[in-house]
Length: 596
Image (cartoon, rainbow, N blue to C red; front, side, top):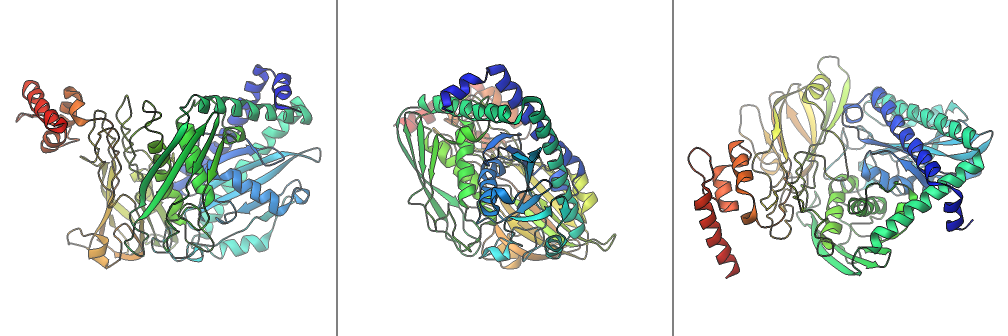
């Protein structure tokens, strides 16, 4: 049936009702996942996503979870259906897949997929993709900052049935659980993922019973066509043209200090958009590379940020956007290259690069760059209280870039995560660490008419005999770029202090080649670790910022008096007030120098 006739056959009320039903189903799957998961990364950090697909593997609904996963899951499910083949799916089957070279994000993203049948007819698939805390490999908690191939990053699982016609495939389960350090927690998390699929299956069967299988398929086709039509209308309103950008997207690769550069060309032609990464650097030896799924996720994420958020998020949204990512580059790693950090730490730079390329075309929509890092710290060992192995991963909140009309958000997971910061109390309950503080990183926001948001800062002490620690942090050397005269955001980093000693960079403390990326550093009882997350960059000239807003930041202690005077050209009195008359005169002088 042609697109026009499909849309005409489904009225808007029915379309919206079914769309909301399926989106709510995906949300309900996520709630079940959160409430039954074992690891804090799932039940507190919410680092997982749920989505629903039609029989052809095209996404028809997703909930508002992790954009990085939701952008790549369309390739994961498509690849899984292609490799297993539709006729080999049966009621009660569940497939597991985490292979980054089969359409995936990075290796820690486990995806479980369940076919849904109504009276023996395949009507769709439900899927849950989540970041598993422990995946085997060379280090506990994942994220070896110096990995050089995928085999060091963890156990790699192609699409394989872990439940066949309702029965667990014990041999596959045994292989998986024998290759992780925390089999109890890993099994519990995977069962929580599987449990969420039961809810999705039940709700889809109920929808098929209400509307009929053929009618339900007709409605979901109309939903995709509707989303495509609205997305094309959004792109058509953007100025036609070719917009190019070059950006550093990796400080180094964990092996050498050589940074990596991204080349981007965005072409808008009517209601089509081409995003071309040709010219980007060759893939690096270390784990800063992106799979195609990661690059596509970042691109789609950026486009959806710049368009109407009320457009139903399904396969139709992606149709107007074509992505070119040459194989063997940092944006499309070839086997067996390392890529565990590409998803978490490089993908936000892809989002910002698309923003930056389109800044002149869409100046009232595009923000300055965000902090662009999670300042990831993973760790593991044996818990002194129970003798059990543990593995943890802490992801931080960075500052988002200043916006055309507002300041950037403070201490939020960068664009691609949408994850929550795990509470201090939960981390201390589950792991042998004790916090000195977890706070906003004062002074980290980039100055601007609308300043960037502040990053976060965490410091904890080790409360066990041995803690194996890994770091994966970007923005240690190259700060977020400001926009339209805004200043760079503050840098991120990790520091280590031996018991009773002072803080040092990882390079000085333990001799690693790169300060932001390392693996298997051994900390002992009483040692401390401090991580801090980058602030967002500023939007517009700092000399145009409202004086009252600057005074609030100074009085609240978010920025120091000296920083206010230097970055914003103001005069601050001894009691923290901004002298407005003196500030106006000084700003006029500075503005005159800039013009001259």
